[in-house]
Amino acid sequence: MEQNSEVFDSSSALASVGGDVEFLQEIAGLVRAAWPALLSDIREDLAAGDFSDLEANARLARAAAGYVAAGRAGTAATQLQTTVVRRDWAGAKRAIEDLEGEVAKLQSALSILRTPRGCRDARRPTLACRPQQG
Image 1 (cartoon, rainbow, N blue to C red):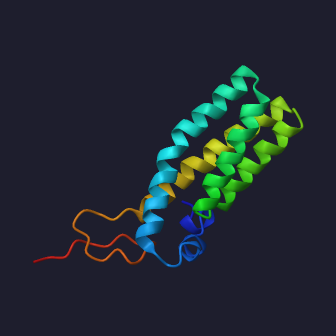
Image 2 (image 1 turned 45 degrees about the vertical axis):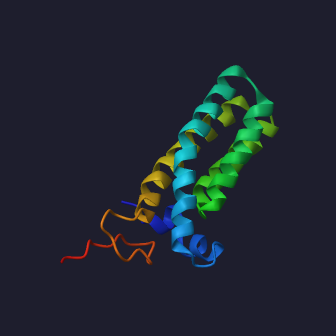
């Protein structure tokens, strides 16, 4: 199994929000919630042959990845954008598949930023804390 640090850089993500774990958790939640619709739009753009919207959505995907320091998803989104600019449909299709794979890994990796119910100390975004007894 891949390490979360290979999918997103929690230290960089945390530094980008000034060390505010709760804010990072909010951002990660928004990013996680946005991906399904964004990927659906990307697939629809490809099916419709809409280069303009596909390029715009690839740019949004790159930005979403950047918000949580997800380098591999960002690289996949950049590759998609590059293939669209070149009007390379076959390359765009492969790039979308790569992006979907990276996003699936990212969604799983970002789940560590959730605060479990009953958790009293969520200051560390890399590990879920255990509920306190008593």
